[in-house]
Length: 260
Image (cartoon, rainbow, N blue to C red):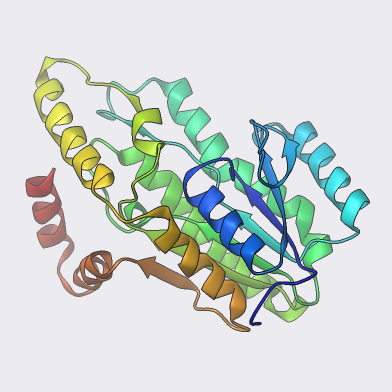
């Protein structure tokens, strides 16, 4: 698939960052891009919906199918982050993160699946944090790990139905995600280490790869008839992922604890 003319591409959270860059790339290749997000997009056809609200998701899906009659590609991109010690993280904050990063993507995928049979494609935007248990970012890692497992299982379940599912795992990306993160420093026993860890994360993010690089990986996956189940984006992160596979868990966690 050299271009996406006449293709309908739905992207959650396409008002900024990776989602916006991905939408622009698809649009330049001829696709009609529909953004599903809490805020309205002035670049793509836009459906305002909170993906953690099932009724709003149903309304968005009905609108898109009613207007276009189909959907060809679904990009599950919307997400957020929280940081801080596990002990001191507000339980509602943790639940809200799972609702956004995991359950929101799950529900909109379920709603679109009947319309994606026979040639449809789904891409989940996960993170290398799904591979590594990052201290003071446990809940983000947990949600992205869940997303990766969901994508892998769905790929096997829907392949006989003609649906292609892949998961993209970016490393640090320079977007507004950093400033939007909810932070908890925790009690004195954690505060110093938590601040140091989050500061290191934010430094890496602010100096990270461009969202366009991740967008290119997403679009390239959609060009392929049989994309890889998982694609790590960024040479450094591919190396880290390789180390995680070959080194003992104890060694990996020691390295991560020194990094953060």
